[in-house]
Every structure is written in C-alpha cells, then in structure tokens.
Amino acid sequence: MKCPFCENLEDKVIDSRASKEGEAIRRRRECLKCGMRFTSYERVEDVVPLVVKKDGRREPFDMGKIKNGLLIACKKRPIETDKLDGVAEKIEKRLVDLGVKEVQSSWVGEQIMSELKRLDKVAYVRFASVYRQFKDINDLMDEVKTLFEGKDKKIV
Image (cartoon, rainbow, N blue to C red):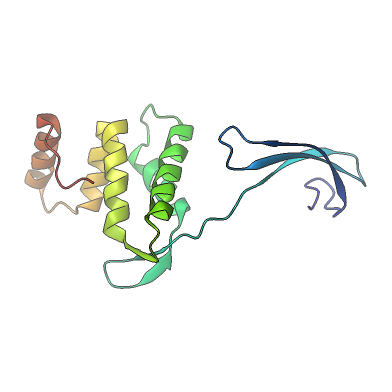
C-alpha cells in the first residue's frame, strides 16, 4: 500500500476490523518511512453488468454517472450527500443482485426515478423532465398531476 504522505510502499498494519456494514475491512496502517498513519479499506469487487444504451451501445455501469445525475436533480434541495451516495449504492447493489451480464439503461433510469420519488418530489420532477424528455409544458403538468394523485407511472 502506497503511503499517501510520502509514497513509500512499505507499511505495517496496526489495526483491522470490519466496517459498519460488514462489506469491507478497515485497516489502520503506519508508514515505515515517515511514520504517518492512514486508513485503507478492502472490499470484494462486484462484477457489474454492462448498460445497454438506447442507441445500442454498451458501456460499463458507472456509479459516478448515477451520483452526478442525482446531484444535478437535487441541486439546492435539502438533501444530504450521504443520502445520495446511499441511493447510488442501493441501485448498484440491485443491479449486481440481478445476476445478469447486461441491463437496459431504461432500467437504471427507472430505479433512479423510483428512489427520487421517495426522497424528494422536486428532485423527482427535475430528473423526470430530462429522463422522460417532455415535449412541452403539458407533459410536465401531467407528470406533476400524476405525482400528486399518488399514481405511479411505470416505476419499478
């Protein structure tokens, strides 16, 4: 493990324990060169399926794109970043749990909308307006009306 302070490759592990969720191992390390202490985390890398885009392209699932979309939808909303990270992690876990090699991008979008609907209605409408590509104000108004009537529109 490279020391983040002096970039030395030799260190010793002082303490190891499971993280709160039990999905990672937290290790406290001490650099043998500069003596500084730092923390590292080890976790099993999940095999994440490819996402099939609307135009047929395939690309690896990128949690960064999910987080970025959530941040944009939730801009200036009273939502903690930790909650958004949790949403992105939840969607990634669902994706891995599907056990498939490929998933349609629409599945990912619907998952995001489902989580935003529970988290913040304004953020949901913001995301839906881009995701569903509303043609005019009437489409937007229909979505808002559906939201307030409590009806779900194809949200998984």
